[in-house]
Amino acid sequence: MNNSNWILKNLHLLVSLSIVVPVAFIYGSPTILEQRVDIQVNTIDLSNMLKAVMGLYLAISFVWALGVWKTDYWKIATQLTILFMLGLAVGRILSILIDGVPTGGFIFGLVAECVIGLYSIYQLKKYSET
Image: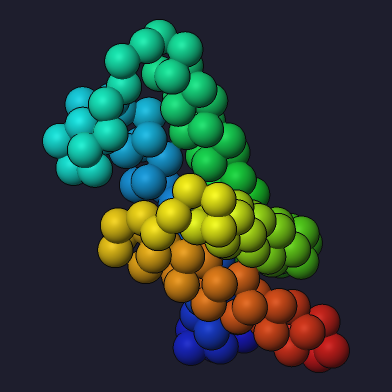
């Protein structure tokens, strides 16, 4: 597979990695959350929960990296991308319906998750047929 085909096949995984790894570290750092997103982490329990989410995001990212570098993992990594992105999108939509509309950054997140999730479905169908 030539370089441009490799990039196209793995684009959803590469984009997901480039977004989710930094977000994982932001979620795991109360100082960054307070400075950049105006979220106050006032309890050890909340800090613990956010670091657990960081660990989950990094573990999922590891599977995506495996999918990029080892073709045997590509399908499961792509399926995980679909589940992860569309799962986040459903949670955000639920929050909008229950809690109200968040700030623009979180709306952008919703749109990006939908786009990446749907594109990953397209990728799975496209490359499962060939």
